[in-house]
Length: 163
Image (cartoon, rainbow, N blue to C red; front, side, top):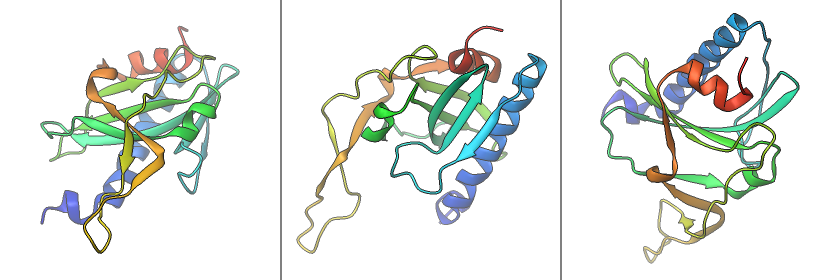
């Protein structure tokens, strides 16, 4: 078992800290401050609420290491009910946790999340008969629906528009 599977929650937290630090530094360079509010649960569909330039972004964070075979993400449908909801998929170097690039699923600032589609997610573990129940509140989004974003500066534009 690798540290990535053994301590995945801790890794996710560290990646979130790094993402927020990078974004806040980028916005600082632009002369903008960012307010960061955390959700303690993901039942509302987002991990962090970011506010800058008078805009709010409800952001669901996802991650995978560079080279992983991950080709889809499970998205909470509640995210679509949030103003300017979006998904930021952080791809990172497994040895250093440094960001390699980002994948983006969202719309322009102030616009609703694109349609999530109809593919319903399933529980990862089966019941006593091995059946994996559907999760009505989860949709599966393939990697092809995400846009590759190379830098935090480009991601800041997706989140909050041009300077």
